[in-house]
Image (cartoon, rainbow, N blue to C red; front, side, top):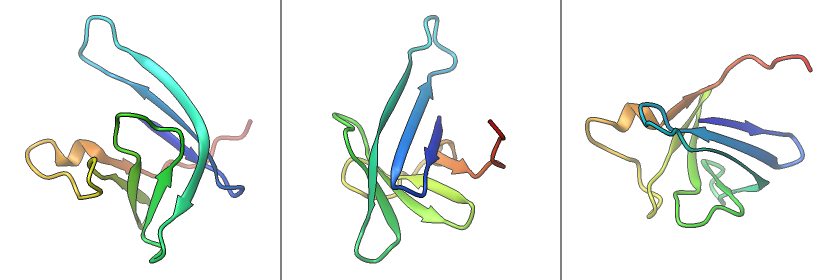
Length: 88
């Protein structure tokens, strides 16, 4: 998963499922909004999938469909680590 957030509140989300015979890949684009507390963002245009991320220092944590942190053995797989920007 690669989520790119821009200063104009737009995003692009690229997802590829590893370990599958035919890894489904997709890209979605839209805008994001902050919650009132400034702690989570919500991506517009996401259907039938989680669309919220908890914002931490240099990381985003994907939240479940109810906006709660994902727990269990795979919880660490839902943490996106900030990568240095790549010059175009």
